Image 1: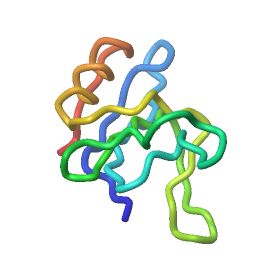
Image 2: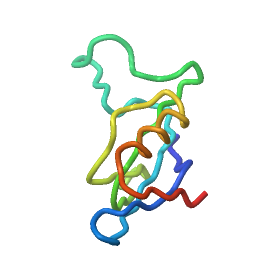
Image 3: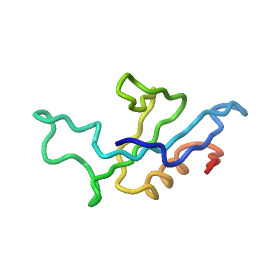
Length: 94
């Protein structure tokens, strides 16, 4: 399961707006079985949140892909705060 839970825009360069989305999903896409130590990074509900900056699309499996993805977060609130601290003039659309 993967879904967009927050959408917004931010000022990339002198009024040039870029998209930002926060995606909730039930797998840690940075975890690779057999290569990563420990368990996948998921919260108690089995979810993790990633921020995608810029344009995004869907791959052949229906999963969201983008050119820029953040570190994982265990809550939507943590992801929102991180995004707000990292980009200029962020405006959430939801």
